Length: 258
Image (cartoon, rainbow, N blue to C red; front, top):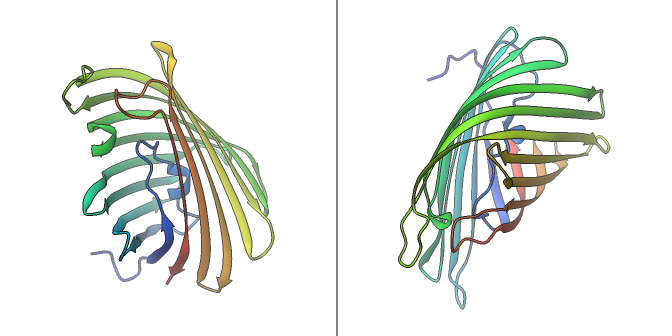
């Protein structure tokens, strides 16, 4: 249990429409805590949607983050799990946990260490485990705009589930680079937008790369209530057999914090 003096936040996201991507890069930029005083902070998000009657569909996502900050050091734990069914047949079953240590060296440069585990039944991913490190550079930051550039390297192990007639199951271990550009723009007092683009090439094979583009728009409806719109596109140049290379997802909902 967190101490009573620790800042706390709870957010509930009620989705009007929700489609889960099959194989997405985890966008850590959307999980970063705002500037805060030393101590603990966290949030929990729930997303639920469904149809009944002629169409039977249900989707559920639960995620949460916990942050600890002391002077120039921040530690982050983030986790998420998604489950969905269509006509009583499971079509989504995935989750991840991410740990990150951030050390702010100067006003514009931070060094980071991270580790992550991921699984996704419908991209045949039994387990992806990785560990890495890098730097995050602040290129621009003022009251309305911010631009961040990230560069990192990580070592990962991926295990694919066997499927009849497919031949690429097993475990593969290799290095990837991780580069991203994050943009934040305050449109007015009620609206702000973000965009994050990731590029993750395999270091031993330039033809093997993954790309993520995620855009978000938040509109303040009340002091503690926001409307959130999100679009996400992912691409894997060399996906597992039977898995499509490109996924598109979008969702809209309301977020309440207290």
